[in-house]
Picture 1 (cartoon, rainbow, N blue to C red):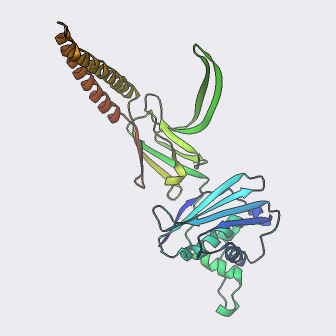
Picture 2 (picture 1 turned 90 degrees about the horizontal axis):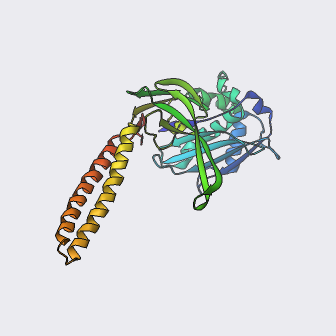
Picture 3 (picture 1 turned 120 degrees about the vertical axis):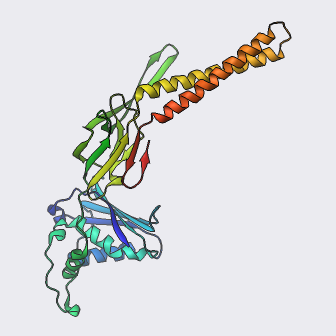
Length: 316
């Protein structure tokens, strides 16, 4: 069984007129760089790979974490700029099961017009031209959805939920009361507000769910959950106020617990008349600290934001 897993491509028919290079890594026994280059050129019906390429396809084939095999293709310019990626997966035990699809994916990266070619009438098997074979195989392939962007839908009960794009972290230095200090500033861009229903560009960037009064989630990549050009997010928004209150309760509880334990130990080892009061006070403080710790942890846990994707992945 094969399935197209991911696709990102910034391509133009003009790319087919450029000089191309191919870098390929695969385990022993799988398709090699030479065989792959030959298969691609047969599909295109012409020689395409040359020295000093203007564009390069960097590819690799390796065992997948949830599938038997995963092939990843990255389109890179001569300046080293990553222009897009494709990923193909196969459930077959034999890594050669992906040979034709890898070659076709590389061919479509180089010449996108091949995808829109009309299949020509098939000649006799012995007289088939390489390009006719490519067109016949393409007619059996599903349409490749664009992956430079993703249509995002957010399902949530909170209207304050927003999709945030990670913008980067900058660092600065200054002086505080205890000497030099380093300050880190993390920036985010507001992409859309629930329910979103927008086309989000650069789906391979890092994103978070957040918003006014909403606890921010860990980062995720929209492209990792793309299905037919669409990503659906089911969001349980955590209340930032309650989460902060729970955090203070947890910190206060831990502090009280340490203080109560110290008082209890001090009273137990003291031989003075007032040692009994220290023990009782310590036990009470320890009990209060324990209750605050438990309550704080529960409140924080219940108010963490949670994102569930259609593929079952949960991000908190």
